[in-house]
Amino acid sequence: MRYASCQHGRRQFAGLLVDDHLIPLDGITELGHTTTNALLADPPLGEAHAVPLSELELRPVVPAPSKIICVGLNYLDHVGETDREIPEYPVLFAKFAEALVGAGQPILLPPESQQVDYEGELAVVIGQPGRRIAREDALRHVAGYTIANDVTMRDYQYKTHQWIQGKTWEHATPLGPWLVTPDELQDAAALELTLTLNGQVLQHASTAQLMFDVPRLISTVSELVTLRPGDVILTGTPGGVGFRRDPQVFLADGDSVSVEITGIGMLTNTVVAERPPEKGVE
Image 1: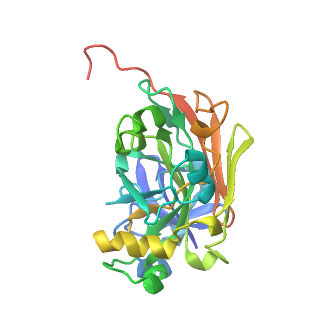
Image 2 (image 1 turned 90 degrees about the vertical axis):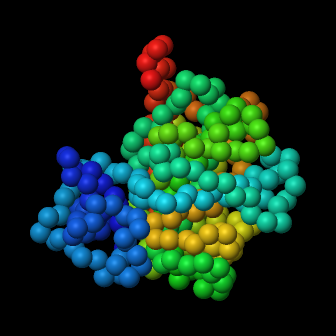
């Protein structure tokens, strides 16, 4: 099954995708902490109120996760292009929910950064809570999979040894378009990922190349903190990022960037330059 969080006029709701309509889940405004695996397996559908997709604005699949845990350096070719050592333990960092945008919504290009980069990624959404989850049990905690673009402000990322200042700018991390339940995917461990910028392929890989796979990531993160329904894990990006190209490639006003993952769909966003704040106005 495929689910989405959306806006219809002033109304917000989570829904099940059927053909070209979204059927609302009764009483549920968005995917997140209330949409457990059990609920998604038997959703409370308001079938009489289906809305055509053409009338909807898609929000981030999970608009307000309690945690967004991201993984760096998880594809060997990306480790190679960054000239870093191969990690023996997942490189983890976090984002805030304010960073998220939905499919079709603009990626805001901040006036402060001159090096805004793309990073196509597979994202995992948790649907069953757990702490210290064994690797062999990890996939039972997955509600589904979606697509992310871990947009990164490189000039800010490298201001310090920590990455948060380059990774969580507001309205800059697309997440969507759908939450695809595991039963929809023949092999979630071997999905083809392709990122295009204005139609040009810049990243292409298989999730089979992940050095730390989804069960290992869930097990590792849950050692530190309880994973809860709606939490999101971004699994890392393959080689081909703009910062490491020669010449370098950065996002610019008017660009169109798409991330496609087989079996899940395509996440497309336009880049829009954010207006500089007026002096004396906060």
